[in-house]
Length: 377
Image 1 (cartoon, one colour):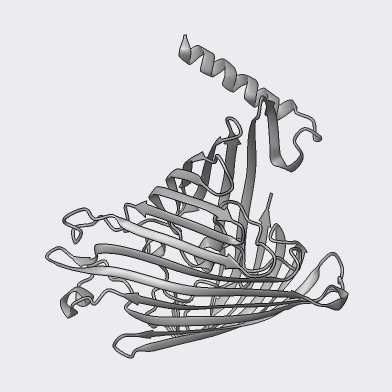
Image 2: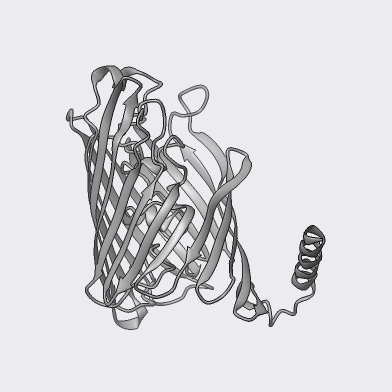
């Protein structure tokens, strides 16, 4: 009987989605009454990229079209306090669970999420790929949950987060699985926190997420944040483990000028420590994390006058990573966003030069040109 009731309700919901008027479906949200609702959306990022000396022959530009992100967003409310999120992502050609969160949100100051979610981290990781200022924001070493799957994926991990806002102070602290491979023999957990203070206008994002530009929509913004993550035996190989700790300070400043022009400045300094042994570093089976320091700085200028259906936002970004063994890498990016509808519809053209990447260790020293498009609903 219960299964038949569930099937009946599912049929009604599907029928409601198919037949609902455009007015009732505004914003992708269906109102089910009694404080219940469900929202459905999507996000796509696709790009054409040419990279120097990367073709199979080794002496020509590699030229590739790539679907960088393809997401389906589903969220809902059971009542004013209990909510849920279920998002998917195209991962290595297959769709998987990006986020699945049970949400208890009784107040602005205190909320609890449990499930698979973003680990509290620095701004560029809290942005996700859709809310960055530059197209290639992931060129500094990232926290463990953004290092390929051994400790989470796409910045997400299974755990619990408590978050909230008190006046101009925002916080998020959580406990997660983190790295749970053979080096972590005692199954130690990862602890993560982000603490931000808004000196001018408050940033406006869902929960503890962030953006790296608001295109002047929030007025003047100045936010300074500290993020910290730690896990005992969070790196290395079985029998040769190392403790992991990482910390970053990030700053966002956005100033609205006359004529609708907007200046945006973003920067970060990050320090990560693992102290891995030479044997662990040389072992391909080891979960190796960056050990050293990094920083980046970005400056952008949104032109107030529309050209066609959008506005141009040229920017420049510089990244520098240096390991504790004094091995450095860097990357410069020069680009321009064409903003039609904020983060929901924009185009990007950029050129990069250098060898920095999200691992923090030097990659191939190359020049690239990329044309990208982003769309969300």
